[in-house]
Amino acid sequence: MPPLGRPSPRGRGIGGDGTGIAGKDATLALPGWSTASCPSHLGGRWALTLPVLLLALSGCKLIDQTTFAPAPEATPVATAAPAPVVARVDPRTPLLVIDYTMPNPDYEGVLGYAVRAAQARDRNVQFDVVAVAPSTEQMVGAQVQAAGVMRSLIADRVPSGRIHLGLLADPGLAANQVRVYVR
Image 1 (cartoon, one colour):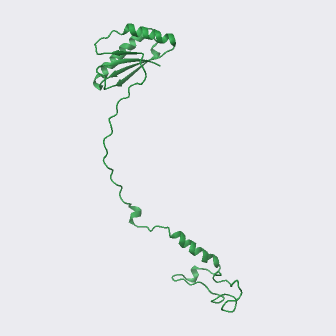
Image 2 (spheres, rainbow, N blue to C red):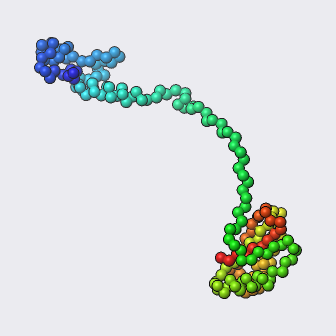
């Protein structure tokens, strides 16, 4: 079909003047559209633009109250409580473990031997002295015990800059421990 408002490409139409069915100045009349909204200088482009415009707008959504107030989110389903976080105990193998199930264990001799063996392998070795307590109530006592082990290391001629103190809780213990690790 030829574009509206233009001469027929075949030459003669029904009107006899070569302009198609309705005559020389024929325009497309759509309900609700005036000829001013469809200028004649656009010609065939407007006839192609209108269907494309209608097709593009067919995917649009009408604005209503759900646009601005969408459906409320579903209430979360109650889940089981997460497992309590267990304190992670140092995974390294300690050089020495001093167990305080007895009030004053004799560890100075064994500690001196372990320090000399570690320094024989590396002259600049560093030590981690970690107090491990079974509960938070016993942590103060474990800190005091770790400070005593640190003083014993200093007495064995380890510079204080190479000794690092730490404190952990391990509910699986029966009594305080002081663990000495090599860095």
